[in-house]
Amino acid sequence: MKRSTVFFLLLSCLSFSQQKNVKISDLQPKSENTVFPLVSYAKNSLVENKINTFLQVSELEYIPDSGGNPFKKASTATNSYTNYVYFYSWKKLETPQNILSINIEGEASGAYPEGFSEWMNFDLRTGNYINAEDLFQVSSVKTVNGLIQKRIKKRVDDFLAELKSEKNPSEEVQEQIGMYEDCFMDYTLNGIKYFFGKDKITFVAGRCSNHAMRALDDLGSHELEFTYKELEKYWSPYARNLISGSEKVDGTSPANKLFKGKIDGKYPITVLFNEINEDDSFSATYWYDKNKQPINWRGEFVHNHFSITEDDYHNEELKQWIPRALVEADLKGNKIIGTWQDYKTKKHLNLELEEL
Image (cartoon, rainbow, N blue to C red; front, side, top):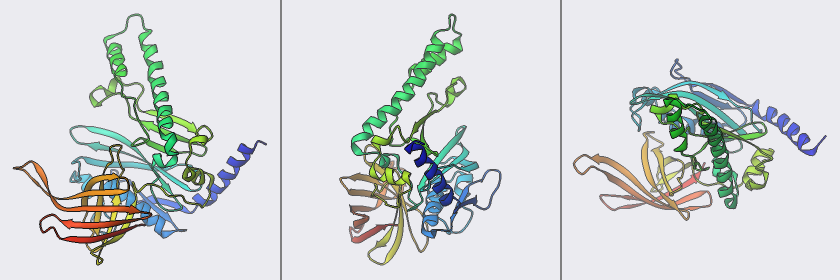
């Protein structure tokens, strides 16, 4: 038996052993439009709480244990993007032992309804959301981006060749050709959807069509499978340990992480940073642990330094947001240390956070 076969058989056994500790039920109150995962992990309550907090804050804009119906903002379109959001199903995927991957299906309705699929991937050793960029060596990220883009291009080009081979193409086919020729294909690890499998990772890139052209889009979204072995030489140390079942946890970026700490040494807060974009911009949600009301941050993260604006209200006359506070802080290991400055009084308060 080959060594790689033995490795994956062992990985499968370890995965079953670890994954049986993870239970998922439906977040209440459940209805046909509110089928949402609630994770239970008897082995580690901190990991369980981190995963549920991430899911509920990022998807529902609800802070756990803050009272009321967790689906209120989603079902009444009082969320930050003013869309009604319905959740129809979830599914736990088969993965290596250190990983929890959940697929969530639903629909968002603004000017028109649009179905969506989300994949959430968590490190069961820490409870942290797994960022795709953290899986690869810094020097390999550009190469992996190229592999993804090459697969998308081949898929689109192959289908275009079929369409163009028709002798008397209909008007619909001609429209399809135009759509696929203009298809955006420059997806990168920053922002792409993906999920883990038993022995492979699947990246999911957006379709070529906008909503109006969707009926013409026979390809749909691009699901691109890579075996772990194919990507072996590009993995970061973090990814190697994550996938192999090792308990060794390497450092990763602050993106999509929860931090806990205090303002002025006496006001306990929790912060969830969202994804850090390719232009270094990001958004975050924080709340005072006492009242659990969400407050939004927006800012930049450059060379381990955070520059953040906390908005107070939107001035309709000036057509701009009026700040409530400014934050300047540095990432030092697993801590964020800096100041929270009141925009009106200019008073500085110490800010100290630590990764949960």
